[in-house]
Amino acid sequence: MPTVSRMRASLVVALAVSSLVLLGCPVGHQSPPARAQEAATELNLNTRFGRMELAAERVAPTARDAFLARRKAWGANVRVADYELAGFQMKGESDAEMLVKVAWYRIDQGDLRVTTLKQKWHDFKGDWRLVDESRADGDVGLMGEAAPPSDPGRAAGAKRAQFPTIRLGQQEPEAPETLPANDDANGTVTPASPGDPPR
Image (cartoon, rainbow, N blue to C red; front, top):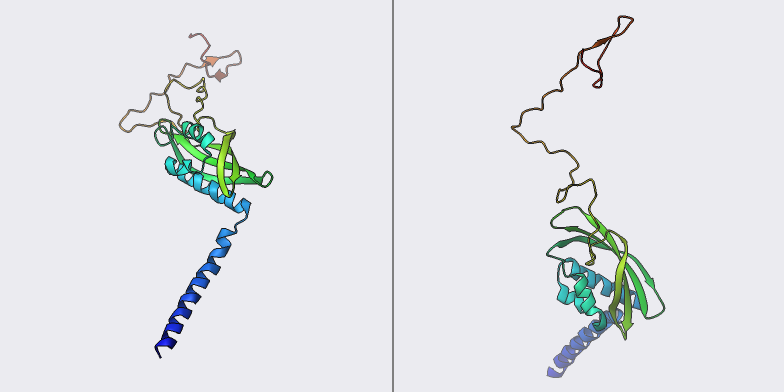
């Protein structure tokens, strides 16, 4: 009788192992585009939350220093609000291009900006790595570029406001002084214009 129980136990173990192997097969056989998109998602998610060390693991060694230099201000002066993978295209069997829209703002300004990045990826024997990236469209300043000159109509250091600031407790501005009316030759009264000399 002990031999039957051992056979059942070994059968249960064999079934469990084979089911795990069968369930794990599709993961190992992802297509190159799927692996590239997974690598891009992982890198951009890590940079979104400031995990630059983890993100840098998805960057080719030759591009790693430039990648980190472009993101030096992230988390300190620049905050990333969100990102979106906006486009993907394979370039042959082992290269791909990814468009990534990044919503961000400067801490000192607070205006939400959007920049589209073009990322170039290469398959190093099944390991997709970022090899280059550049700004494709949108606002300048996310990737360490010099900030564009401010609007000439704005005072230095002034923040843009959509509505004027109203402070409670201040008196209403006084109404402008009205000028006396002018009589014309027909006897009609017309209001004086500010350029007319006083009578």
